[in-house]
Image 1 (tube, rainbow, N blue to C red):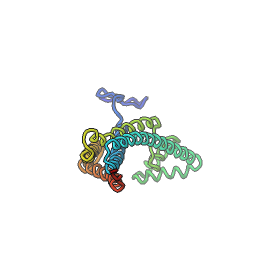
Image 2: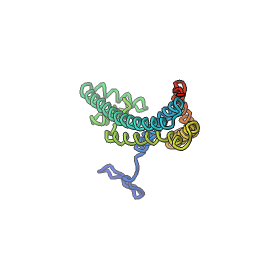
Image 3: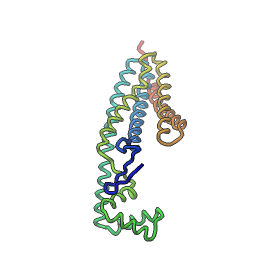
Image 4: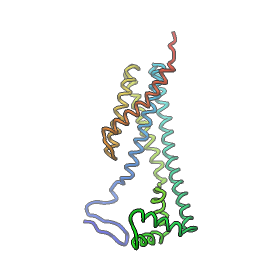
Length: 249
């Protein structure tokens, strides 16, 4: 049974506690960060080690180059995730301030924009005018609507920047280590094949999981991710083969 508290604007239910529910938007954001870091780390390091393997055939150099790329990539990806989130937050705030100035300087023009937005949604007559009056009665609501409907922007919580950076960084490390594992146990020639195959399988699984948790056909999504990632990494192998280090007699 659910009850609505008019004074506090809260819904109370005997069936569940809303404090224990996970925000689906946060889950989607975390999934996006994991895929971003993991896929980027895996593909980039796979390309590096395939290039080294093709150029030298030296297992030690492959591992050294792979580990160097792993940690450089993870730090870089984490930094990009952090700075991009902060940049998005800064951009939202700058646009929000600009909209506040507009409703103070040209309120009639901004009110007409609200009217046009909701007229395009199918509202008209007294209902449309009531919506316009309700929205424009509060500057904060007015600006929030303009940000969402006109600019298609949503608020960005700066506190998520560090969390996003950590998730992306860790995912990049995990993804980067995947193509390195075969070279610890088998010869280079065999390691190349296992690394490509294992990486393609992981990318396929990630694509399937992504489609199941969001939208799209799991098999198609998995195949697309596996093919794109593998082909991208094979560019590194091609470069290494072209620039192969000649063997010293």
